[in-house]
Image (cartoon, rainbow, N blue to C red; front, side, top):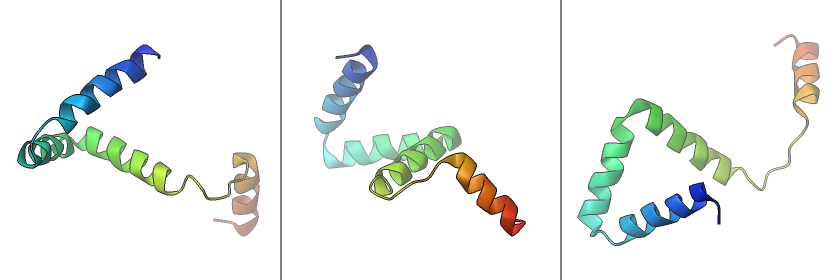
Length: 69
């Protein structure tokens, strides 16, 4: 297991050991930080859209340029 994954596992275990009220307080504190909140929302969005089809970025740009957007 990589160091990053190992640390993530430790933090997750610590979070899971908290009471519901404590978890809520920790999450609320994380969301207070604008940068962390944006990162969390980005990760959630990526997780939600993981099964969607994708296309190469250059193809997207070509279509966008063609539309004049």
